[in-house]
Image (cartoon, rainbow, N blue to C red; front, side, top):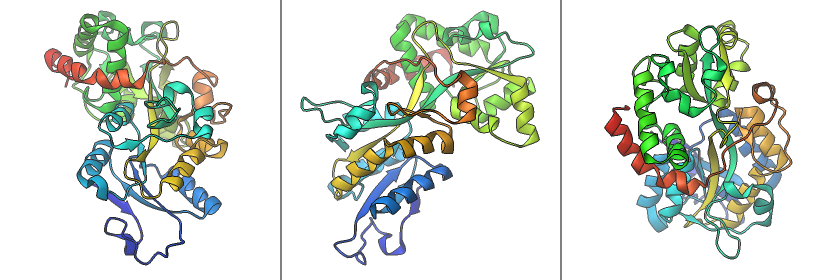
Length: 347
């Protein structure tokens, strides 16, 4: 279901006939559905005078809409929360390369989309979420789950809880593991996870954390920001969860922890291209990066930005080793991964 956050006068394809020519606008298609992001939009408008019209949908829905609308699309900025979707939008020609010294210098190179010879990139990452392992401190030892490989090890039989293998978060993780381990070992690993499951995959990441705390599961996979939400909660039931679970950032001694990326791009047929670039540059600024961290418990990515979120600091001491394989590789591997999931019965 698509949610619209646009003025009544702009209800059809942002056709804002009531807006005068000199008014500055920006039309955003966003897969970010976090209340904390409202501060990002309002601050940008207050600072620049550029009014934001927004359509909210999921990543797949946004890409499908862009393809259907073609040159008639009113979208200027596209915000997605999955690395593979960013890659798919790029390869399907839905974005336009943008050249920005501010973005190129602020955002690490591995978080850029395809870059042209003159330094223009198709998209930029603005925050990350680590794909971590949580474990029940009463019946699982941390050293038994400090790598992703151990999720499929027989020593953890009957302990694993995880959401659907076909969810984008898991497809991205599995696509990265495929690059590290190769096809034969990755399929064996996926089969091992199926054999180790405490229950059929269901629910979201928060449900997996609760399953570990209740003892239904011994270990689970989750994005770090779901855990951070619980850590920052004042509810007694959430405090009880945190007392029972530990967290591991896997593969610190090898390739590093997998991270998923939230990023932005300028739509191929953007009518307000300059405003779109200005907005993306704003997302790389220190205040916006701090909002990603404190407002939604994501890891900021801009160089020189310090983390002040207490939950993120508690998890890692403020930093961790993350993998750096190209996003394009993760995206291209997902077709093979889905075939493997079907073969091993990973729902």
